[in-house]
Image (tube, rainbow, N blue to C red; front, side, top):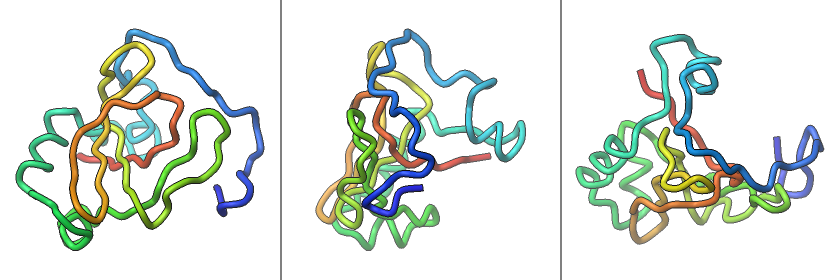
Amino acid sequence: MNDGISRTPATTWITSINENLDWQTDNDPCTLELGGSWRIPTVTEWINIDAIGGWTDWYGPWSSGLKLHAAGYLNYSTGSLFDRGINGYNWSSQRSIETNGWNLHYNGSSSSMFSYNKGFGFSLRCIQ
C-alpha cells in the first residue's frame, strides 16, 4: 500500500531486475492470486487493446470495459508514488530487454506501448 507519503510494508525496494525472462506462470501474480486460468496480458494483447481503443482522453480508458485508471506508479529507485491521477501504466507479461518490460501507458491525451525498468511498480490487469 502507498498513500503518497509512505509505503507499507516499508521493506527494501528492489531497484533493478536483470533477467532474460518473461513473467513465468509459477510467478505470475494473477495466476497466484486468482487461479490457474488468470494471467497478465501479453504485449500483443495490449497493442490490440490500444489500437482498438484509439484513446485520446481519459474517457476512453475509463469508459472501456477494462475501466483503466490513472493509478500512477511506484518509482523504481525509491518506491515513492508518482503521477497518481495523471498517468496510467499496466504491465504486460513480456520483457523488452533483460532490465525492462513492456507496458501500456496512457494519459489524458494518448496511449501507447513503452518499455520501462522492471523495478517500477506499475498496475496489473489480470485476464482470463
